[in-house]
Length: 368
Ligand code: 13P
Ligand code: SF4
Image (cartoon, rainbow, N blue to C red; front, side, top):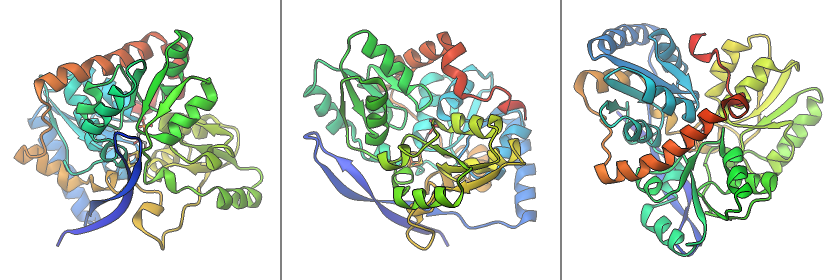
């Protein structure tokens, strides 16, 4: 029988007031080794039959990450998932991640079929930034360039001038600041604050947060650092200020991975979703990785550094969407057309600056 889990997240209205709302996610039943093996075999066949490619985010189940690489697909952060899906010749993209990633793939490739293992896999940032409220917020700040994080709905992107991901947000905001532009930023307040500190840009911030990264605790992190004085601290910028302030390095998922693979330290305390540890262990097997502290596993699911929506992606869902065609992403043509502008702008900008901007990426990831 299907089990669900529920938790609180931050929702903002058009007046900038935040309130607490409730969200839910499904909990997948666990599979034994024989079941996983059989499913993987069937998925490989189905991918071939449908001329499909599997694109997985670093936070999803390790089996899916491995299968993506074994079948000629890709494991990446949200920026590179978008680029890979757009450039790949397959007729069907199977996106293992959360809904905004599937929507971005569809917006960039409207001619392709985009399938997801579970369309209910969402994100607290997306949920906390409803399109109507966001549009009213933009109307209240007509003099500002609208920059939205990738973790938003297609309808929110349709209202934006730029989309950014955590691997290019700093550079794009710096570029806009250098052009003298004032910015409206949504929805992650921690990433917005971090960018503001780093660039000195004039930002008004939407007050959303990620239920996973928002849980990292600064006092407990300080204690852990004292216990491991030689460890390097790596933090995703969706984390609270007291956590990023203690970081040796703040960066996107791909930048954190690169820091572990290429770093000369032997121990790393990592503040991000623990799904990323799968790839870190594969690419840096000799390194000691420690999870940054949250409220602890005995508390709610949101406090064990694992995104409950990313965790909804499993082998069963991938097979089902491929064989039954369920889980197809649809984006209304007008929304698609308008959202395409801000995503394309980001892809062009990052492409042009690839020498410096994409330094956060590990180029050989797809091949390993
Ligand atoms: P990336 O853009 O680094 O892949 O992060 C996406 C995300 O959802 C982080 O929580
Ligand atoms: Fe959204 Fe946070 Fe999950 Fe990333 S980890 S998809 S930001 S809820």
